[in-house]
Image 1 (cartoon, rainbow over the protein chains, first blue to last red):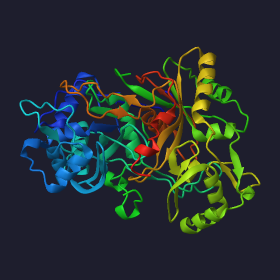
Image 2 (image 1 turned 45 degrees about the vertical axis):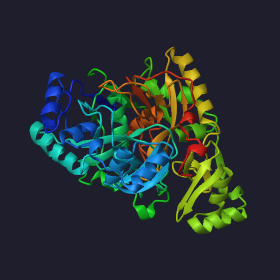
Image 3 (image 1 turned 90 degrees about the vertical axis):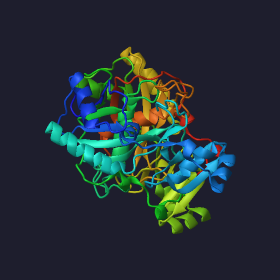
Length: 256
Length: 256
């Protein structure tokens, strides 16, 4: 490996995750089969969907009774009223609506489309109205998993839970951290000096989001279905701050 | 290397780039010294600042005569009127202003703070009022460099020019592609099916932005000053589309 290089390693052959599954067992077993083991300061990136599935964060659209607000938004967006009702229940606030667009502040405070509710990559079985919600507290989930992986492996690793989201001014989704443990999410380099000794004007780096994006490059959205990857060789500040420090405070947000 | 892994390789020891420098020569020479050579389908990510420097995209704040609009915005933002004037000259439109905040649509169409004008990592010499502008057409710059690197190396590589930008709802900067050649910037997986045979609802991936973020992890903002990295082992669609396809059309943008 060239000096300073990092490697992004997909973890293949994880089974379909079911409610109650122990992700530490599943990931460790898949790594074993691939001849992989953790190294010090590995960052394990896990897709939101397997956290949600293991934590049984499912809801059925059949259980919804759309409110007047949901019905109105459904008309405006062209979305199913039951789905809109579910999104509203998973949100603090509606940020924007438009044709096929429903952007909200999800319960966790993150601004995203449809409160991060996903209907892809779900084994719907007999119920075609099943939807997968975000974990209730992804930072807590990341901390718990990090502690268990550390104990199990004897190494100090970091864990990021990543989701793919849209952005205001650009097309396409990009992965970001919705949960974080053991890595500084927001690397504050303000006050550092540049190569010429001038103080950097604005440099807080969304480190955990960028690590999520790097991992996403090997994870895939469609049939590949690789919901876990290791980012190895990254130099990063260890930290106990949650990913929620990445969320811009509403009162500082000019785009709400 | 585990199956499907990718590596992100920093290119160390590039000299300070000066106007007129040939980046193909500089990068190739630095790679030679490090024992690196291109492999098929490598993605070379270059920091905006070395493109701008080589293309002599400098301006001096001393040359500015602030307009009434610039003076007003300077008051509101607390920024220097000469700097605001320069930003306005490099912009199509002002999107938001606030204390210490000036978000514009830059000439290239990208929504970003201060039109991407940077005053860090510039050898200001005797003139402390020098600022570095974005390249005039980063997609064209990427294409030209890609062609030259391909000819020089005999391999088919892709080139991305990356800049670090802020986001609407999250703190911290994240790298994105402002120029692109040879890699599909916006990977459209709509119409693909998920693991259970359901059609993916919304999946266009901002591939070039995510590759930029991955590269940024080894590049650093402060004294490290590593303005080039290779992303190797990525599976990606080759494409001739420019990075500008990532820019959300103004009429489809709910946050303008």
